[in-house]
Length: 339
Image (cartoon, rainbow, N blue to C red; front, side):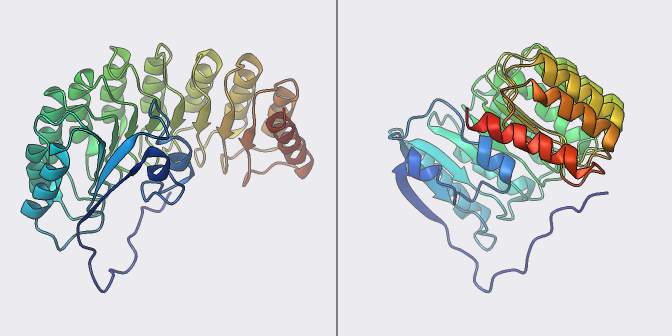
């Protein structure tokens, strides 16, 4: 029902580890490799940092031929500097569980490394246990990406137990980590109990949370005081899950963007979202492509956005909606952007 990310052909020459220093404004340029999608590009680097803040980046992305010991040494060097915000980019570097353990040992007691990119490294619940221990030891990570790893429920449950110690966490990506209902419920329990109070964005795209998991997560986030962006695209939920999302959208005083594309929301789900749009004056973006919505739901959405001056993006493409409704929705969102 969705296509898992597939790596392209391996490059003829593997990249070598490198490091660089820059300003925050340069680090967050649109070409940043951490921006693997529109959601990441829009929200991953929201936070308190200033444009002139000094940043040190250990660039090991794609360095599969570099041994784990050498990767750990690079990270140790990064961790030793204390005058700059540290970024450890280890995405697609073939770390595995053992390599992750070595990297975390190198980060021991670091107070400056705040961004850890671990995408697509064949990390399992075994590696997550090491990561959980590091987080419980107060590793001050603000941005943690575990996208495209094989966490499954067991790994997410282990991670969730460490989240109460992650008071610095601003952005968490568990995109395509095989999260199912039990994992989603463990994450919901942690967030509902006050974990990650400063969390701004949560990416759970391309998992299998279904109605029950999404509902539990949304209920937990209803009382969250900082969540700004939520991505639950491609999670096999139906109108009941969309209703839970809509309730969160309607009541949250901070949530400005929700992505729920490619779920079977249907017209009942669209009606729930329409109600949320009428009630909420904080929400700015709703991504609802390919959600099995017909003219019935399209008309509800059109009527809801008519009196809403905050929504600047309401993406209803690839639904079975009359072009008249689509144009009206798009035009109103465009007018709101110009306000």
